[in-house]
Image 1 (cartoon, rainbow, N blue to C red):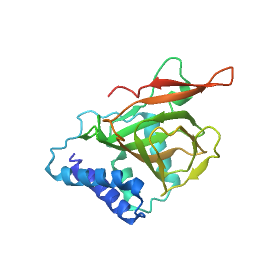
Image 2: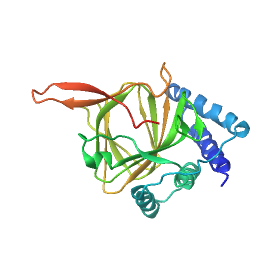
Image 3: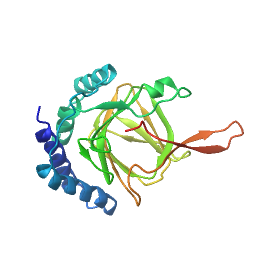
Image 4: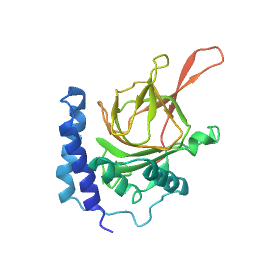
Length: 227
């Protein structure tokens, strides 16, 4: 299958989406990144991998997202159309980690180190979270933008600030190195993410935050699954 038209539709929808948002300076890097991708796609030789991995849980959650959500925008529809044609993977792994967390966080890239378009300047992909899941406090050097395709989520910036809800069709901006956590509700949650480098090349460094028995917090360096 020629996946290039679907990819072009996704990036074009993102460009249109950004044109409708308020002209906020903090979105400039994302606008520039999407604009660059839009210019590159027509001249690139883009091929889908011969073998893609779409785990059964991902299929189940994507189907559930389609059943319970009305996709009103071209961006959400285009991302859903390409979602089952991407290579999905668990973003974390390890014997000492909570199995619910390991088995509840999936991602797929359109653009990035393992995406259809290779890049270390911008990552664009889909992120799928299981229902009733806490993605605990973490931070990363990349500047991050979420756009909610299905479901709703609570995001906390910092340990003590009240969480805020982000609903379908909305977006959330996470500054570079902002400590944050995510909590899903009763349904699976699908959103697109964009990472842009603040200074260094992507992916940059990431850390978990963990509360110790003495009440102090420690930062633990970690890496996403190998590309």
